[in-house]
Amino acid sequence: MDFAIEQLPAADIDELGPLWQQLLAHHSQQAPHLEELAPVRSPESSWQLRRELYLQWLSSPDTAALTARGPHGLLGYAMVRVVADRPGSWQWGAEPGDRVGVLETLVVHDDARGAGVGQALLDAARHHLDRHGLKIMKISVIAGNEGALRFYRREGAVDFVQTLVMPLSPPP
Image (tube, rainbow, N blue to C red; front, side, top):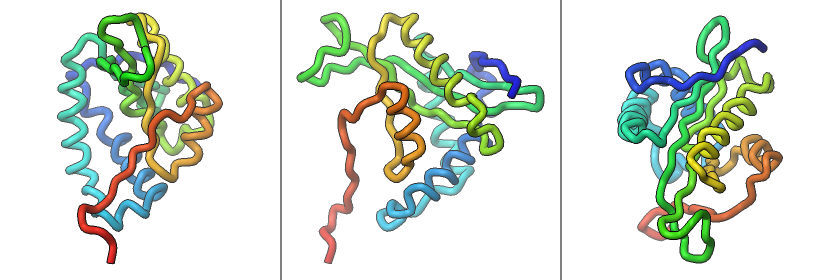
């Protein structure tokens, strides 16, 4: 598959909306157990919330929206940013002020999966963070998305923290 990786300007953020909505659908398929706690947002509402976050993050020069674009349009994107992170037990970077990369989103169009797009976006995210002198990238994966876990583990990711969500009222 023919594509190029480019950095998306913040002014073009709305190009990412349809892919974000595909990811929302994928998440709801992979993690139906979460609907027991709360309903899935509408695609429009979800995109508006994510869009606001993306614009906020893109106001930092350390953040990048990396896109994979083919002859017929957008095939995927990765949103990666730099954050301060001092977990206490591990020294992620040079003291003082450990910084890590965060892969906030990586999504590949349904029709482009398995064609190397995700790999190219992950490589571009790594390169972006390496240019900022970072050594660690954090990645969150929705519970149930075993394919994503296998992909990241093949790339050297290891388990660090498990985040659980629970209702405030105990089950009956």
